[in-house]
Image 1 (cartoon, helix red, strand yellow):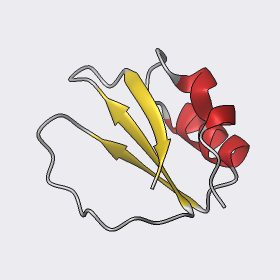
Image 2 (tube, helix red, strand yellow; image 1 turned 180 degrees about the vertical axis):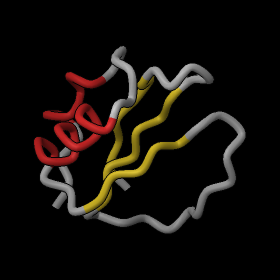
Image 3 (cartoon, one colour; image 1 turned 30 degrees about the vertical axis):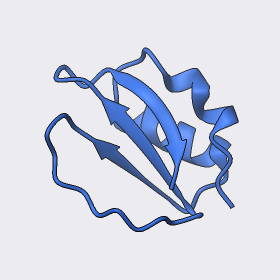
Amino acid sequence: MCNAQPAQFAVGQNSTASIVESARQRSGAQTARILRPGQIITKEYDTQRLNLEVDGNGRILAAKCG
């Protein structure tokens, strides 16, 4: 089950593959996805997914499960 608290270290960093994977592993999530501004996303809640919200430059703004 995803726990976003351990993934908070990633907030403020660039969303490189290594940062995204480290955040996923620390959160315990099975998957991670990057949510870009204006991107159309599915709204279903997945307890095994980490969502990383990024700005237009790819900097991580938030890490949340779902």
